[in-house]
Length: 360
Image (cartoon, rainbow, N blue to C red; front, side):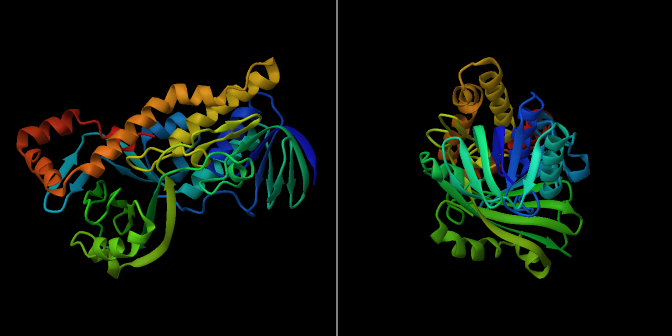
């Protein structure tokens, strides 16, 4: 099944759907090409974001919501700090449902969805797919960290990744239903951190990341041996997966009429690996830029637009990540110990912006 469109989106998950919705609602003929028989990332995501961040995407999320979070337990090698806020700040959600709602929103706006349509070759204004040839004035690669679009058009490679493992475990005694647990230990988990994200009283998402795939096995053994994590080994693993997360954007995300969004562009924050909201916001910039280009003859200025709005924030997260990576574990212990006094806890609970942890 062939055709010609103003915009062709490669990839049908949340970011692809967001990109398509932004283009379609501006009157551009838009098609989403998804190689799988269904859309989405199949829940290969921890899926926790601030409520304000989720709202900023414009994607309906009420049906995807599973749990609300209003604080965190922060662990280092030898210390712990519990921070509880008065308001619910973050939402744990079903990523598959969220992806489906994103694509449904795009279809409602006028985009066409073609499932089981794998791109087999890329040219300047034409894509060959398993179902025929697709012509496009603008091509948007929303096909994830291992983007075929980026490879085909020879975009600069992503230079740094974080390598993660996560298991969703049920029939477990979840210690804190409304608190995430975060583990900072640069000896055990160099380059990233560990987490326990509660889904309900009996289910949690337990995972960690490191800066080198060769360190995964040792890190997994050590992390699941921690006293806070080891009880989950007796639960039932509902799903588990490994994932690579971009730790910095590509040097370029636009080449002529081809642009990249989301993980394909490396639009993730280095501190937590989160990219869902950043990707969705960049998708809005993509839609505005493409519409201005095709409808009004303006420059296709997507790269300029998203970097001017969000580049500084991503750079801040990279600098914070570098700082965290250089911290000695004894210094992390001392920081948590100093903040455990009642006055500090009161100030952190009252004024601490937990939204910063989960925003974007």
